[in-house]
Each structure stands twice: as structure tokens, then as C-alpha cells.
Length: 266
Length: 193
Image 1 (cartoon, rainbow over the protein chains, first blue to last red):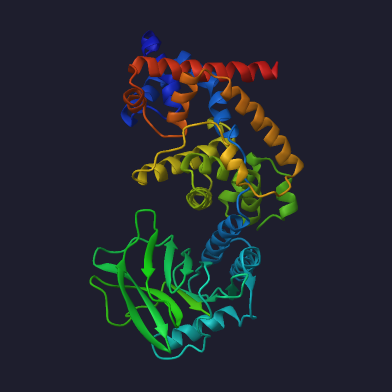
Image 2: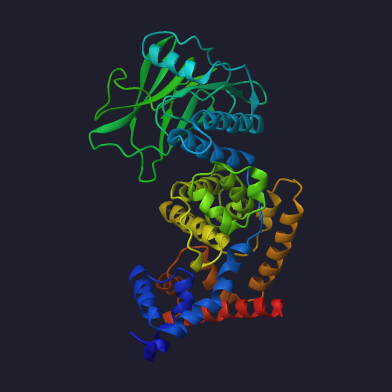
């Protein structure tokens, strides 16, 4: 294709730049433009107008928690890959981001034991009895966001301004996974992100612990293409710990693998 | 080795990108602070819900971080490249939500009312002024031109879909898009003169 049929394509350039061409049409125009200087010039000329569209949007202040969440994921990645400042330093920065998140979003509670120590404690106690964590204290709406780093526990108490409910993350087993726990009344919803795709014969299964006993929520779920997964927790009364494991298709009566994320409810 | 934040703040966007590609969290933090606000605003403009806008913004920035910031200088500025990523993710989110129509007007009064009364930095204030001028340019378009541009850019509709929605010939939609963008471009050029 050459400049000889420029007029035919020229009328589509604006639609192309606005993303309004079908993919095959867009690909065809791109092939044409490779050999058509006039089309390329038209695109160059109109590019500032296209760039003006998002810049003209009314500005909103993004929530501070959003920044903390983004940076927590970044620090978690850095820690998992062991690059840059070194794994220990990155872990510490990840924890700091989470601390900041808690300060910005909800009132922090008790001091935290060492991260790795808490992780190993959880692994030792997996499905084997009381966790030594405080029970649910209230029913107000609370949101908890955590980043899970392989082999490390990231956590600490957070709670609503009314002090009605707090949660503690004990351990995470999957790199980069983030969890958002929303509790309302006696029920809750757990949202996970950055979950790796599962083999076709595996599912995610949520568990809760009451009085030291681990029990299934009886809701199986899988991540979507974007790595997001959610499940309802219909009965949070007396729950001390929420965790998610991968299980064989159809679920299990008790956890058969290490949790990919674990949240302590205080 | 990571650069100190103070040093990163002195770097241009194009100089930050190689550092981000080398997984420097300090450089990425500066990058987020520069563009996170407009990215979130754009995402909200498209998806119309705060929670969804947060998800889109977070996913877009994390994708840039994890992809090693594959920025191609030849394709424009870092900011426009970043916003194109945010826009694409927001449109994907919009399309994945059945039965929810995008907002189709440049009137953002309702959005403004929800904005926290926090002080903006001088830099942000300057950008807001620029944004106001740009918005005026968009608002100055004839209604039929701004509508097709809005449906395409903020709504994610194809020209064929817009033609059917508005009940006008496809050629008319193409023409309105072209005229609208050219008018905006002309106003920008006048502003620079």
C-alpha cells in the first residue's frame, strides 16, 4: 500500500487514534501508514489532541491507600526477587508501606512480633489447634489489604476508627498476592489479587478458624484471567483466622496445602 | 542499587524509566507520584466508580512495574504512554461489566463534589489549570463532535457501534471524529502561538 490510496485511509486516522477501529481495521491502517508519509504526518499532527483528552479530565485526588497498596506490591516483588536494596531491606520497606497503609486507613493496634517468626509459627500450627490470636471483637465495616510474600509474614493489627474490629495478617505463601477482607455485620467478603492461574484440577478453598478448629467455608472459587478471586464468608461470628489454600477439584474436608494467604481477625 | 528518592525526583520521566526497568522502587515511587493522580482521574472518568478506578490504576501501574517499563520513546511521552495503558485497562474493565453504561458527558460537577478538600501542590495546581484549559477546548467542540469522541475514547465504542447508537451513517461518524480532533489540535496550536 502506498500514498496513492491515502485519501481512503485518511478518513479513518482519527477513529484509529481514538481506538474506534476494529482490531483488523487498525492493523490494516498501520500497515498502510508504514508506507504513507501523509498518514504518518496526520497522526503526528493529531497526537497532541489525543493526548489532551485524558489531561482534560477533571482531577481527583487518588486515595492515599491506593499509593500504599501499589508500593506494597512493588516492595513485595522486590523482596521476592531479591533485587535492588536486598531482600531484607525490601521486606522492611514492604512492611513500612503496609504500616503506612494502616495509619492512613484505620487505627493500628498492638505491636508485632518478628515477621519470619510469625510465619513459621503459623506453618507449625497449620490446622493443628489454637493460634493464640484474639477473637473477633465487633461487627463494623473494616477493610484489610495485605501483600503476601513467599515465606514471610506481613502483618499487624488494624481496626476501624470505632475500634469495633481489627484484623491481623499472619502469613502469606504466594509472592505478590494481595488480599482485601471486607467485613460487614457477621459476614465478610475476601478479595484476592495477583493469584497465579491454577491447573484445571485445582481450586481455591477458603477456611476459617473458630476456637482453634479449622473448618471449610464450603465455597470453592478460582481466579479470573486477571488473577482476581473473591469469595463470600457468610458466617464470621467467632472467626479468629481466615485462610485460603489450593485444593483438588471438589474441595477438601481439611486443608491439604499451605495457605496462599492468611488473615487473623481480632 | 537503588537511587535515593531525592535524586530520582530530579530525573526526567524518560530517565526514570530505565531505573524502573531495573526494578528500582524509589524511581517507581517518583513515577507514581507524578502520574498516579491523573491516571486515577482518567480511570474514574471511564469506569465511573471509585473502587473500580482504584483497581484499574493499581493494575496499570503494577503492569508497568512488572513489565520492566517497556517504554518506547518514539511513541510519545512517558505520561501519554502511561495514560494509554490506564485507558486501555479502564475500557477493558468497562466492557467486562455487563449492563453498566459509561458516563457520556464532560460535565464533572458530580465528581468534583466528591473530591476531598485537600490542598494541591503548586505543581498539581498548574496541571489543573492546564486541564481546565484543555477541558474548555473540548467543551468548545460542537456537540455532535464531542459526543463521538467521548463515546470512542471514554466509552470504548467502535465507530460502527457509534454509528448504530446515534443512527447516523458511518461516514458521518468518521467525519465528526476527524473534525473534532482537528479542532482540538487547532486550539492547542493557537494556545502555543
